[in-house]
Image (cartoon, rainbow, N blue to C red; front, side):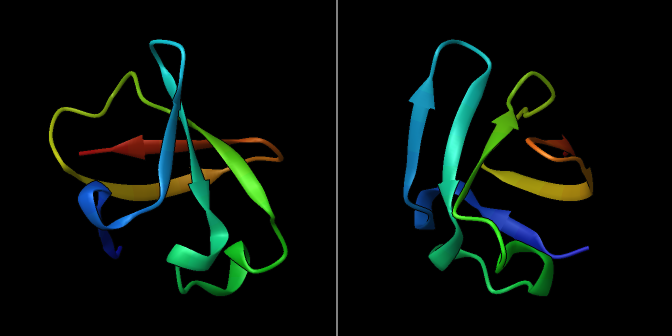
Length: 63
């Protein structure tokens, strides 16, 4: 999957385990219908993440 550099995204932290990603920063077809989605940060260990699956409101990520 495509790696995403968090430094280049418009992100806002929500609490200890979530952030929001602006859809305009990600050029993927399945993001285009979403305005914003919450991202689970618990498994993020560095500045690069990979998307492996997503639901209605939470993307599941691994590094």
